[in-house]
Length: 236
Image (spheres, rainbow, N blue to C red):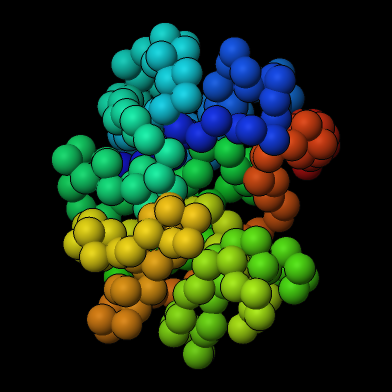
């Protein structure tokens, strides 16, 4: 299975550290952030990486080269920052079959194997790795409504969250997501949201299941997040 890693963001909340260095190369527990992301994917069975680069992306390419621990890497360039949905859509020419998306700024302490295994073992079209948060946090990300074992709705950054079950930046998706992304409309912020495309699949009848992650996860956006991720990895 292939893994798509969006890693094109500017990391504005981590400036000045990201002024001359891409966010993905900032150190977490003495290794670049992207190294942890790649390791998480390899542990889940991914055997090819497609990395979407943008801001100072040449540094990422120079650092990792053509492979990571003998797993080949293909690089895709996102010239404009138009959201996660746009970043994933750019990987389409290099993807065949179901694939994993793992955001390049997410550190999963206990891995994502459960989400990938669910996709391969169950009769489902897509799997979302999810977690429960408070209502304030839910306003800042993709929020799910669920009936039984199926996702029925996904909404991005709602003012009034319909639940506190949210996406985590890890998705196991079918190739049909690219058709949905082509239909998605930009948000008020001018970005194309991956969550909207997944919701289009849900409304079209695709079976999408949530899988709660085990252990901690850190979405690295600030210097404090870097410190927390490092601490968790030192003493999991």
